[in-house]
Length: 129
Image (cartoon, rainbow, N blue to C red; front, side, top):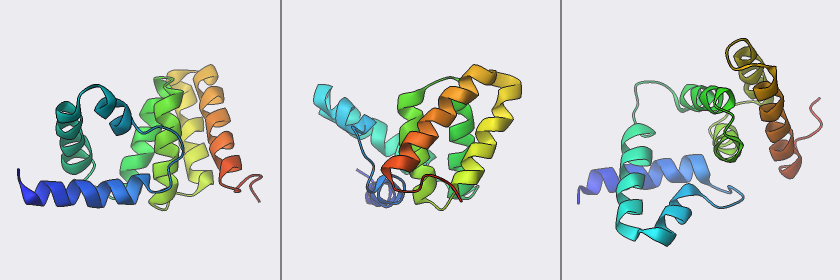
């Protein structure tokens, strides 16, 4: 196993997912197939999220936009937390969600904003100033 990829996976996972509440996808995968969970983690977290072509904040805002349009609240909750962990401001995350209303529809945006509000409440960051 490539020690560099393992180290990058750990570093990126610590950056994105520290203090994340709820079950992480890796934990779910591992409960079914430990080897596949490791392979998925090394690829997704180590090779995709660990790329340095764009800043982590930009990567997470893109992820939030995609998950908002796709109406994937469980994954969105995880990536809202990751976005906050890498330095995105709640107002930026909300603005990305509002922007997606044009493409994904207002109901998807409303659902995403409810998820954002819930995460912010859990972290003691709600209400916004």
